[in-house]
Amino acid sequence: MAIKHSLKAELRARTGSGLLKQMRREGWLPSVIYGKGATNTNLKVNARAFTELLRESESENLLINLEIAGEGSRLAFLQSIQHEPMTGEPLHADFLAVDEKTQITAHVPVHLVGEAIGVKAGGLLEQIIHTLDVHCAATNLPEVLEFDVTALNEGESLHIGDVKFPEGVTPAYSADVVIAHVGKLAGSDSTEA
Image 1 (cartoon, rainbow, N blue to C red):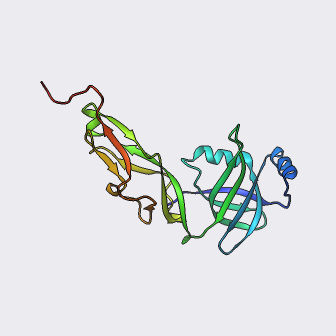
Image 2 (cartoon, rainbow, N blue to C red; image 1 turned 90 degrees about the vertical axis):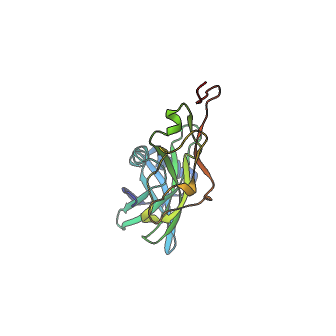
Image 3 (cartoon, one colour; image 1 turned 30 degrees about the vertical axis):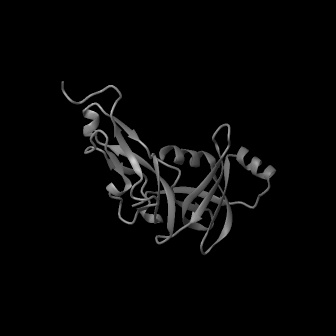
């Protein structure tokens, strides 16, 4: 089940690069919410609160209750963020209006758990995929995907087809894509002489 975050927002009428720069100087992040059955609405959110929300989250793919002043609350998926190239600061955020049935595609961080048998034998665990694209209903969005590598021996790989995904979540890649691999260290020999 997706973790829902809350963020206060206000409607904004100002557009144009000069006005948006002024808004950013005032501590606001220009945003927009759009989606099926919703009109495109220009918003502004508190830049500091938004940055803090990102800092506390595993990824930028978040399910957020936007509490829009004078408009009520709207459930939204953080679709994309434009970042300032040099500092990485958010410049603009796009929110997709969703409901419980809205299907989305998201990039979810992958965490490997456990210590592989092959690592205990002297091998090296190599994580190939660090984020995985998944399809799911917005309310089923996992914050992170954890995959157990305990059973992997040297020379073995963990494939997408080998792991169980949360209910309602399907990978966007084929079953033969490698998530992690336990390689044999050069010069090591696990056989006794």
